[in-house]
Length: 137
Image (cartoon, rainbow, N blue to C red; front, side, top):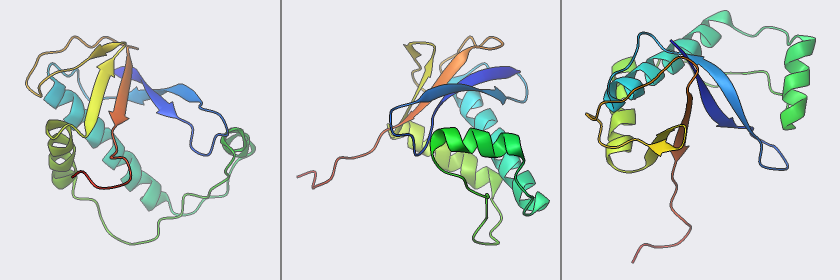
C-alpha cells in the first residue's frame, strides 16, 4: 500500500513540508499495525542504503538536496546494525508515552489498538513532540 507522508524539509530556511510517497507492507488495520509497518519500511530502507555503500550522487539527487539547502552523501558513521524488533518496540513506546502523534489527514489517531481506515494515497503525518528547554519542575 502506498501512502503519502508529510515530511519537513531539513535545513530549509522557511518551513517546507512535502508529501513523500511511502510504501507500507500490507494494509494496517490498527494504529499499532501502522507504526510497526512504517518502522519496518524505514529500517529496511536504512539497511539497503548501508548495503549499497557510498554511491556518487546523480544530478537529480543534487538538485533535490539543493532545494532543502544541504547536500549530503548519506555516510553512515558506524557499523551498527539495526534491530528491527527493538526499533518497533521503541516506536510503539514513544507513541504510548505521548512523544509522537499521528494524523491521517487532519484526524488525530488514538490508542495503539484503535482501528483505522487507511486508503491508498492517504496523507499521514508523524509528529514528534519535544520538550522545551529548561526543567519540568
